[in-house]
Image 1 (cartoon, one colour):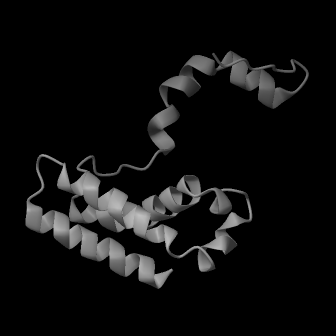
Image 2: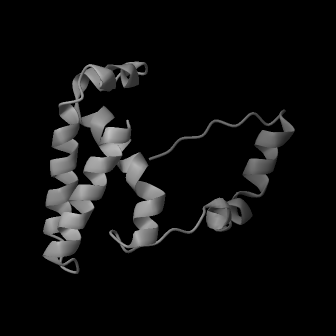
Length: 115
């Protein structure tokens, strides 16, 4: 449940209330389209770096705090877990050949070396 408290004396708040249906129906207009094929080349180009960072930061406690990204230099071994996680996900994907899964593992490994 989402609760929104609007102030009737603020024009922006009143506008959100009065035009809620129109705003809500056009909400996704500002969202960029992305591929829905998880391991397509274009999806990897757009999302691999963000996925690596998210897995590293959310999967390892020292990297989770706001300034935890600096810990990547002292916890590089943790990136091996990230590589393994993505490689295993690729390996179990129904539409991906074993060769493609291994190529993804190599690509992820190379990307972690860049960090």
